[in-house]
Image 1 (cartoon, helix red, strand yellow):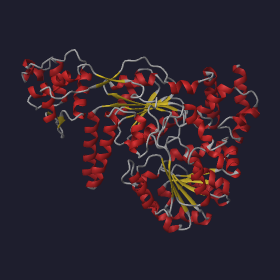
Image 2: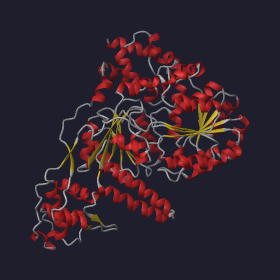
Image 3: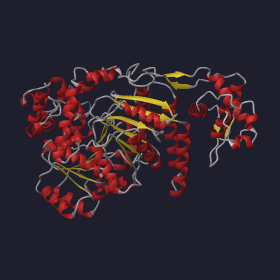
Image 4: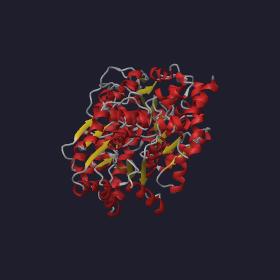
Length: 619
């Protein structure tokens, strides 16, 4: 397996086949000396105006693939992007690098729109970002025709497929581009797409003999952990403490959950805020702006938050509940470590999450008359996600296998399994027998909460009214924490050793496997996380090697100051990876910044001297 350093910098050699024109553009705007795997092929398809489908993991450099060709060719291309926040971030970052780009979206007034259209007509921009709905309006289509646009890039292209995890009906209409502009090339980009989804993207967009470029789905810099959900608020807070002062996202299923978790974190002294679609637009924007400006460290959100986030220095992504698909999980965890530095991804899992998702899917399908096959596809995606969470194997290998990729290596060194952080519970079979026996004693008529009440010896009115304090299993596991007991019950459900009915009042039922366990004919393995002190992993240690951490913090402070002066998010100024390189090499003359990845000509001119002065002052 590649070392951390090889994985992060070895990609530079991939640019060896790039033309001088491409390399000149890379150096001028981004301060890059080479390209990552597949970027060269994707850029070549853009320059040759050959249709393409490019699948690269988040942080793999997809945007560079559609940014370079128009700069080399001296033309204007259109980028279809789903969210205003994402467009604004990308345009801010490009302009900061001296790259001419603009966006047209609903957050602009008519005067601003006319100014951009005038600039486009004069050929001032290489890229124009637009949402799919606006792209297909007669006014914009006429503008595109007048500009003689010859290439369209479609970001988040998986949104066009109903077999993917984030289907958006408005994306389907993008097929009209081939009809309206038959000589233009179309380039589809996505981070997560199974083979079925990739085929659907090609078909729906009507791509003509496309170059299909599928990169590795593995993110070697991400550390994956799956933990049983016990006291989820406390578990989240403990994880966040490992990343004090760093950017983190916590994902949850419902709006109510996000608000409750955010309140808890704030009470624990964490700079956190909630974000969900039910909030007023101004309040959502304020939360997003505060996160971008590093005024808060943690956003607790539903999946409404994320696709529009281009922040490169997110060091932790937490799932307070199971995502509804591996594609969603890959995309959401992919928002961590986009700068190539190590980041932690923790999933707190309970089988109750699966049941909750199924109920939500069925209710939504009924309300919106969703076709049966689409509902069934959604349930299958959920089942694949459940399997990922419960099958104990290398997480990197499991994700790679799902997307049809063979993982190279025997141990990733970056997941709970390969780090040996998961262990079996002592006397698992005996514990399981006691739980199953209790379900039998209450005549398979009650749900998880009541069974746990009986096992833990709860002195509730309901237990006494039903006479269940007289059962032989009453209080038989009173020394086991209640939340651990609940988790054990759900582990048995997951393993198929216990069933839970659907509906508003689900009950626990025994099956043939349950009786096999109770009769001693089948062994059971229950799992728990090992008790261990928090420490940096080998990969995290490697990323800090030779870095002056105090200087790094000083450079972060300077970055915030420059960002505030320019009214842009801090992370578009310089990536953490660039700051760590600066804090390691410690250049003391401006000219030396030309050899630092991420320092293009404009940034050296605009604030190179301030960066060098910060380094000198620190010494």
